[in-house]
Length: 131
Ligand code: CUA
Image (cartoon, helix red, strand yellow):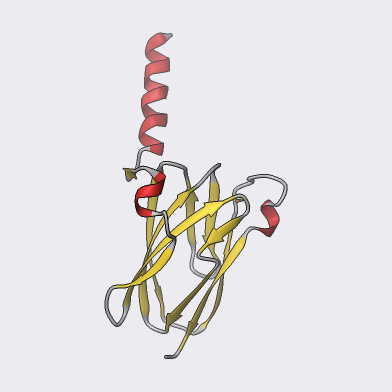
């Protein structure tokens, strides 16, 4: 019985431990969009009840973006419509996804993990346009 518990615990631990555990306030104290070069960006995004920061992200067409995501409270989802991105925002952990935006448009970010009464209002947007 205790062996089974140990296995389950190890599996659970591994699952939430990927890819990195950092203190929430070290990298994400100021959610931001960082330009690396002409076509490369990094977004440090924070989910909390019930919003995302930054709430609006503007990018030029052709951008490749590394999204680094964490939560300031409970588990949230981070779904970028039309891009097939489905990440979890977890307090104390950082998840990463790289996305290229080849076409102009407005890409909604939606929380797809139930997180409380205003869950359905929890969203942000990415605006991709020509410079
Ligand atoms: Cu955050 Cu649902």
